Amino acid sequence: MTHAMDFAKKSFSKIMGTSKNLSHAEFSSGDTIAVHFKIKEGESSRIQIFEGVCIGINRNSETFIVRKESFGDYIEKLFPFNSPLVEKIELKRTGRVRRSKINYIRKLSGKKARLKEDFNAVKKAKLKAVAKSS
Image 1 (cartoon, one colour):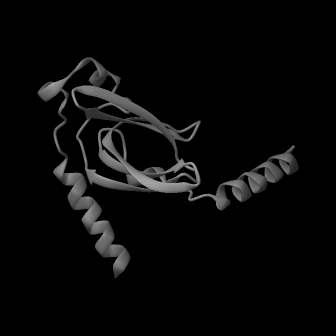
Image 2 (cartoon, helix red, strand yellow):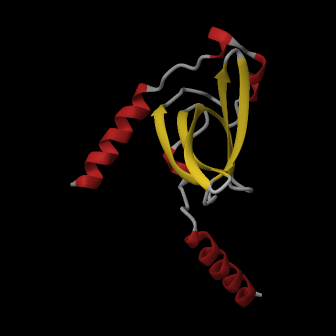
């Protein structure tokens, strides 16, 4: 039984190693992120940026949901972490939330849908970056 599990882990790591393999630790729910992803139109392709609030991360299916407001309407997109179409994920600001899935924000609109910024998380991220460079 353990041999089968080892084989499954090795084959899974080979598959995941071929893609970008973005880490979950870069952001969490409540953070404002910009997802750069490829769009193919005919023969040409371009990179489009989808910037919004991450309202949930699903660890089992390796996906995350981003919600943004566009001309008064709200748009949600589901992105897989290990998709070759996702070029990069930028963290714009960190939000302070108490839940891992902030589905309650779907009922809110306008100023009520704003999240408070977590300044302590920004300081910790800067300290980690300085420690890595040293």
